[in-house]
Image (cartoon, rainbow, N blue to C red; front, side):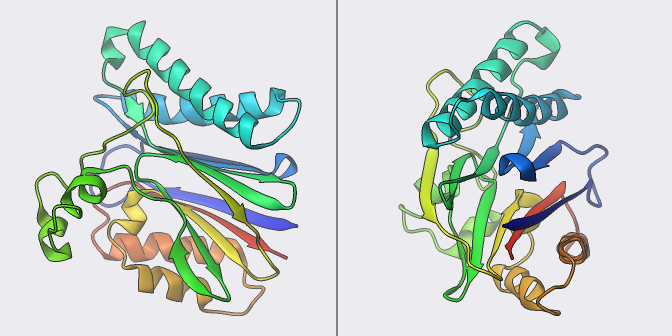
Length: 240
């Protein structure tokens, strides 16, 4: 059994919030997206992608890995189709990370650089791998982390929902949560400005049954205290 919560904040700089999340515990479905595009296009893309995943999973005969991947593909198709039909939405896109309970484990699919982390008895670590210039070009070139933090290409994604028909989805299975374990899904407005050690500390602090909403608020406040340059979203699950 999982308890869950989600919290989003515009941050300290942006005028609008292009992040969007949805938690559906009765379906075992948890989704987060970080939109991009001019005007309101980013907001439209993230909401459309998240809601499309929900609709697809709800309609699936079986909630399994195939249903998850089909849902992400459908989200990409819908965002592309919507952008093609409205010139004001040209170039809109979004990251996407989805967690789905199935067969006693949590299946995860991701596109872009929104992440899923696991906190368990083995420590705190990222499950997902960013589809970004930093991860796929900068690090393989041997650039050090200090250089990457200020590199002009640091925010460039190599894959996104709505970027094209040829979609590459990163898929992860075998995530099993035991009592007390936590799964965090975050937009880069959180993990891009708050050190992983600080995120882990916030999740570990407090009583074992501390309300998840308190932890989500603490994560948001940590990102705001670090300048809050982007929208900030946290989706937090805990096995009970």
